[in-house]
Image (cartoon, rainbow, N blue to C red; front, side, top):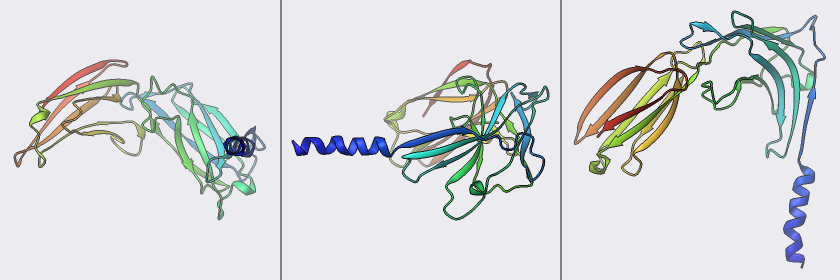
Length: 239
């Protein structure tokens, strides 16, 4: 009986020890001074179109090292204007400032559907930092293209030898707008899997790069494609 109760007691202690709190923390709704300001611009497609009307949210999130508990403070919200510009203003509390053993981060989330938009992290988080201070302004610009899909099929992989290799790379211009082709999708093929599906950016030129090393000879091919939002392209590669 004791042996059966032990797992239950451990589970109960785990549940009781877990605590996740969320609060609105608009102590700085108008932030008359000592503000932390995160501002920037959101674009879509090939950076040619502003992304208007997107809700952005700045949060302070602290988690314990094991993930049993967390504290979330919603610091500020804003919507991008007709030109894609936004500005988040908030006042950092003392315990949110950089310090030793501070496991909190300021996170900026975009309220976008990741099924429709390509966000490389796979989440809505565009930015996070644990070293923000008061009375400072930082600029965060992001390109968030609509999503398309490339289904890759490799043939003749059964002939691949241990010294051979095959790589396919497709880079999308998505994410941090200070970097080009920041969203990298790459596949190192093996003879045991001949199919992969990659989410890519729509409405921009994409280069499908194939690097083949076979019997000591390397060949590189590149092809440019451009897909519409939601489009699925089947692309075949022969080893």
